[in-house]
Length: 79
Image (cartoon, rainbow, N blue to C red):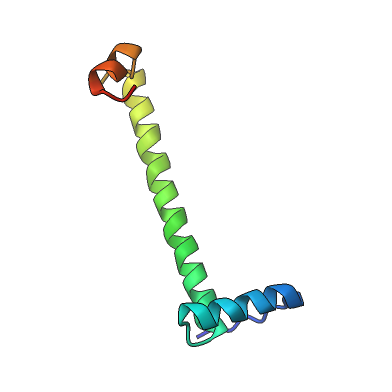
């Protein structure tokens, strides 16, 4: 396993210590590992959503599907 050393201002160190104590993490290392994993999942979800949006726009450009017009919104009950 690799190691990373970081320096934090006192106020952020106090915040990390508080999160470790309140959230049940065994250590600051566990807290940071959870943050990195959460960021990784968030980025993967964003990339997946971006891909789906681009695919949808490409389909509309090819004339596949339909756009969300005012009539579409009215029929879907979302207005």
